[in-house]
Length: 214
Image (cartoon, rainbow, N blue to C red):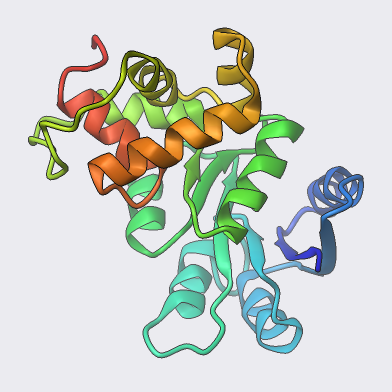
């Protein structure tokens, strides 16, 4: 079954552009478009998308309010929300991730990262735009809550460092001259060893543990 996606953005040109990118993928289907947060919540109830691409600044109800509506406790079949916006204000990112977003992308992140974010969200993983990831994680000062003694191999550490720098799986594969499947295998092993929920937590561990130079 294809991944069902709902696009919520108040600009028709942006909605059309996102829909065109996703329509080119065999495993993704755009099932609806919303012009504001209120309509996004209504369409999500009616169309039951797997993933919602959500802008932040929209009329009637903004994207952060709509996100909280879609992820509130007790909601049945809640979609995974990926915030897609032109605004990279730190507070927006924190609110989105605290609100249960499965990703945060800038609109100029590129088609490959957009598609990867949709697939990651559908699989229950989080993906944050590299520029935002690095900016935020560099500011972390609290110690990691993940295992500090994880026995990672040299190759797994190579992959972790690149994840922490914000590279996608495809970019990591190209940098290390390995396949994307091998990257995913390494990440799966790392995730298990660190007891991390997703690649964002892996990146957080790398920055907080000193695996990556600031």
